[in-house]
Image 1 (cartoon, helix red, strand yellow):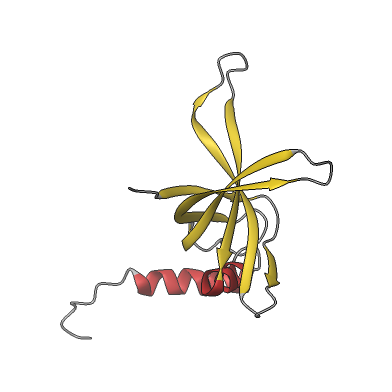
Image 2 (cartoon, helix red, strand yellow; image 1 turned 90 degrees about the vertical axis):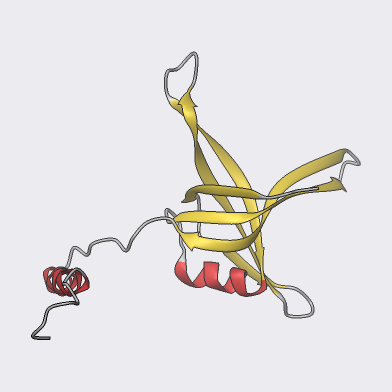
Length: 135
């Protein structure tokens, strides 16, 4: 059997980092994921809001480097949780258990002129050929 999913989208809010009683880190977050097609009636692209959870190192990584609006790629598995709400109604919740989280976009360019200049210099040297004979 296989349960594997990869999704890419933007965080709808900052990740919520908590710790279990045994001090295991767990982070909850939601990704807004655009569908590949437009709606029949509206002609606009529809968006799915997918609940995700990350544990241990992935949770700490997520809470440290991602925030609302960040593009993230989540590699994980679908988990279904059945529960009963306070009115006694049976409920079901689908979520992605993130095993790996990746940056979905490169570092944003800064509005600060000094930082932008430093970024341009770094970009220049990152693209500089390494095989020049006089280096």
